Length: 209
Image (tube, rainbow, N blue to C red; front, side, top):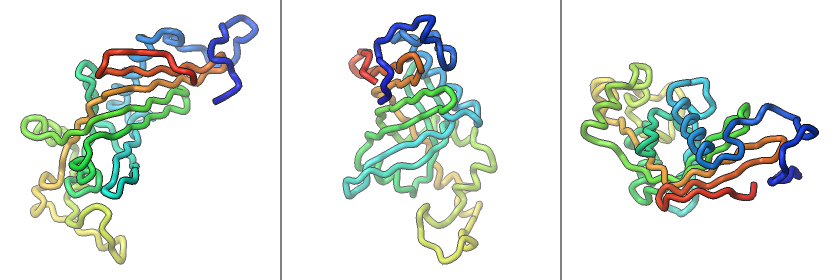
C-alpha cells in the first residue's frame, strides 16, 4: 500500500500521472470496466488479461498456481473459460475442490483483478463448440501421450500420437470458471481505488486499498 491517501480529492495541484479512467469514482462502472478487460483478454493475444494465473488446492492442502489462456468470457452469465488436459493436476484438484482463485494484472493500465471462482468441466454441446474452435496448433498439445508433468529423461522423449488421442480430443477439456466475486484494484497517482463485487450476494463495496 502506498502513502497516497485513498480519499484525497483530485485537484489542479494533484494532476500527476496518467489520465484517470472515467470509472475512477464509480463502483458500477469499475465493475463493467473489469468485465470489458476480461472480454478483451479473450480476443487480444497481446492483452495482459489473455494469460491469467489460476490457483487451486492440491491433495496435500497446499495451493498450486499456473498460467492458463483465457478462451471465453460470458459477461451476462459471469463465466470465463479456459482449456486444459484431462490428465493435468488441476483437473484432479478440481474434482476434489472446485473452488479456485484467478489473478489478472495489466501493468500498463495498472489494474488488478482477483477473482473467486467455481470450476466446472464442460461436456456435451459446450465441449463440442470449444473443440471445434480450437486451432490445429493448439490441438497438438493434447496429442502428447504422456501425462502433463510426467518425468522424462530428455525433452525429446515427448511422444505425440494424433490417431491414438483422436487428434488430441481424448485429452482435451474446456473448463468453465463461474465468477463468484471480483476484487478490483486500480493504481492511480491521485489515489488508488479498490472494490469488491460479490455476485453471489449481489453487493458491491469500496475497500481500503
